[in-house]
Length: 165
Image 1 (cartoon, rainbow, N blue to C red):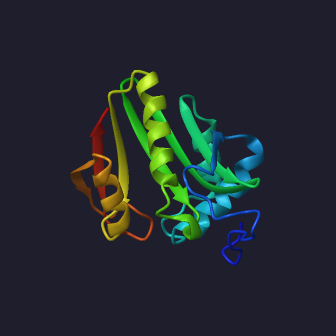
Image 2 (image 1 turned 30 degrees about the vertical axis):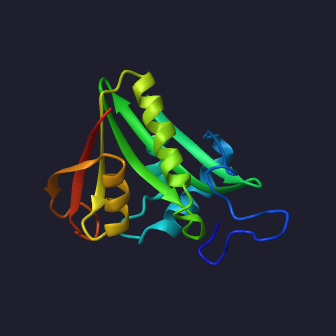
């Protein structure tokens, strides 16, 4: 979905929320759509390149959960785990459907998958100027562990956040 595209709106296709959206495992057919969504959600200096997303998806112990409605990808979460630690690489939601519970549901599903894999803690990075994301993570029990100076390609700092599972 390009940045000029918006979510479909019609009487038969209401705006999605956590109760109406479908949540499923990533499939290779989703690749172009999740790459486009990541580019839409983040500035180019922060968004992952398709090569970076492909590299993450090719690693063992990678989980990617997709949210869709009417065959349109509206969100996804990408994470990996090693032994007892998980790492949320990115969570992306189409800007038109934020604050409808879909992000929370993606986080719940991802955290449950990690628990099922005997993961005891999960970490993520968030740009220090991304107040909505920090509030979202804090509301889910994540706490700032430390500052990561010049973390992103544009040299923006990030916070490392962590949650015990």
